[in-house]
Length: 65
Image 1 (cartoon, rainbow, N blue to C red):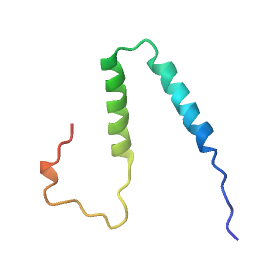
Image 2: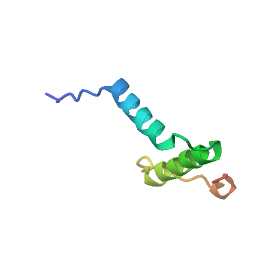
Image 3: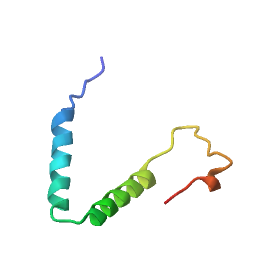
């Protein structure tokens, strides 16, 4: 029998939101945008492609910034 893992998603999301609010308090709009841009880049860099994923031949045409 498989073990079930309970995830309290609402509490998790609220915790993340509250930490981000603390980090970004008093920051300008430009600083906030840069924060999320860097977070997005880190997430894409750390993400693993699905097994068997194939990069499109025209990948060089995709905007990266």
